[in-house]
Amino acid sequence: MNMNTHLYNFKHPQTGAALIVSLLILLVMTLIGVTAMSSSNLEEKMAGNGRDSMLAFEAAEAALRDGENTVNDLVTLAPFTGCSGSYLYALGCNPDVTADGTWATAQTYAGTLDKIKTTPKYIIEYTGDAGGVQSLNIDNYGDSSTEVVSTFRVTAKGTGGTDNAAVILQSYNGKIF
Picture 1 (cartoon, helix red, strand yellow):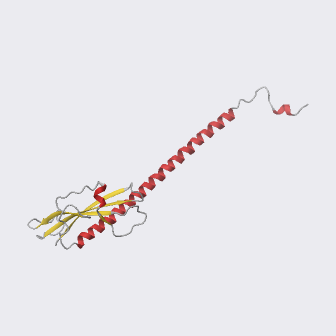
Picture 2 (cartoon, one colour):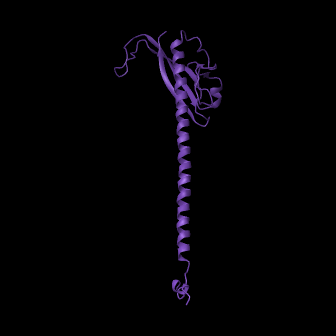
């Protein structure tokens, strides 16, 4: 008597259901893995873009502070005589800060910044005088001086690790000469 005949039931041959189920489970696991990998790549790109935007903001902020310091150091309005120049514009001149050509002649930030592709720049515009007879006290903030205050708009542009991330910031400043 052969002992191997007990082990196998030849009346019900196997149909391969275990193989089909295993392949389906493998297919589902592969789809989950591919989805997780593409999601991870997208999150990495988003984090890189967020970092690039923050670098651009910090660069623009540094250039804005540099421009404000330049306004504070002015002793006269003499540089504001025309619409051209490296960084000073006269009353009535409206440079297009969204055009790249405007920034070609703008004043360059004097400091150094790490991980920034292009050095940030700024433009100072003389926007007119305020004060005199009118009060400068807006919403009870500031002094009610009758002195004439020359007002300036400082616009700064900074980029991040690439030139694709660009930030433009503006501030208004006043100075009594």
